[in-house]
Length: 274
Image (tube, rainbow, N blue to C red; front, side, top):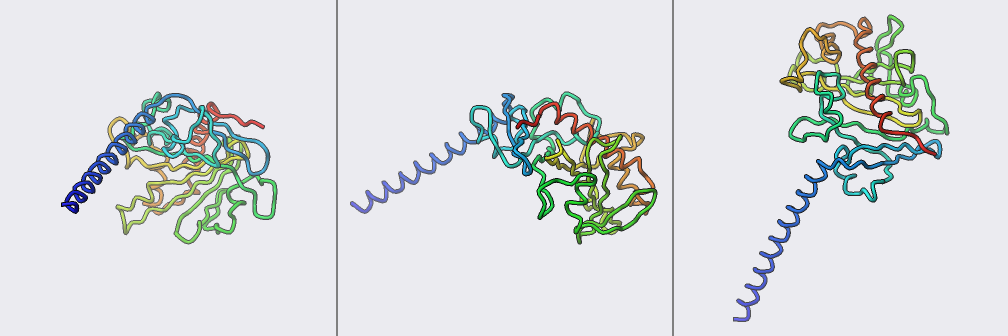
């Protein structure tokens, strides 16, 4: 009888613990849903690796990643790097609702992320080198594939990825690295050619990284017309037809102008403090 009684108690405890776990999960989900729509502005500080400066970014709470959201204390937090979320079309020059950039991301639709972090000097040095920073920083990863029209195309690493670089100039606000996988006619369903990785410089001591997607990922009002000659789709078309990117500087310019728009937006919501 005592044994049966103990089993009943243990069973009841297990039932109560199970209910408690479910209740805790429900509370956590409700809290995350609340945060996803929280427009309260918070400030994140990122320390520089080459000075005492810090980059301050102030945006609605719902734009920051979930891990960071739960760390916010009194509206401010310091991080070594930060991810900021937006609707996928927002920073890829697709036609879209311009107000979406100021609204909390809708997680029922495709999301893209900006990564912001401190730049590191080359090993053995204490200062950053500008003028093709990305090429100088990781020169060992790149080898020349093709040169023409005062441009150079590089092989990146060992995975067939390609890269082209642009310095800060009258067209580009900052150094920019454009890295992409060429179209593979033997694997037309491969998603890699439709994703282009961008790395840029922010306030000289910080970096900015994000991915640009082709219109393959969009539909409805966000789908650009063929006549618009969207620069990311144009890049894919070049390699589908065995052409060279170095013969199409207008496509590189499309990536640069898009990057300038992103920098403009980030500058509106950030500053460097000592």
